[in-house]
Length: 238
Ligand code: URA
Image (cartoon, rainbow, N blue to C red; front, side, top):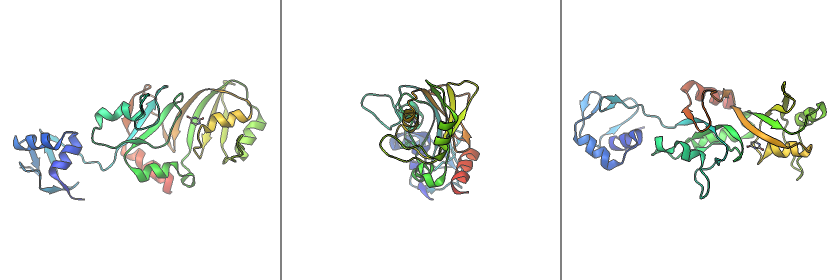
């Protein structure tokens, strides 16, 4: 895909077209080792563009793993609350990022932010079978019947019949693992609600085959490695 050099630099460096023009005029931009001072030439991923000695790696899309803290909403912008996009946007001023899937304001853990609409759509589409894994702290013990019920598909209070989900006990009787293949609003809280069990904490640890990086504290994030993006793609299309 050919793109104007000034747009390419402005997108990649995250500066305005005006500032890009100034940079170009200072002779600090080279394309394939030649100084370029005009922004109207067209480049693509194969051209080596260097600005102030630093090679730009053009990425069509970005994929960010965020450890969402409590109190932050899974939206792009919000009048009252800090959003997941607010947490990262200073480093991605030119990207139209949005969360691929939501966590409740009180939930924590893995939120994937991207500007790749097709990827986000697929990751949420039940027929793509991208599993989401959660560690859930509950206020009552579970039993085998509840595990079986999760497995055969819980019917919510409003009559919605859910797909099969996996409920796995842990050593702590008030902490369980839940694996979902769909994303209905407040799904886990409503599923436990059917059995009169309250949810105290909900933390998403995994999307598809990618686990939340344990070194990320609440509010911290990193871009997915290329292999991780490819793995999720393979999950969806394999
Ligand atoms: N289910 C819920 O109830 N809340 C979440 O945040 C995610 C899944």
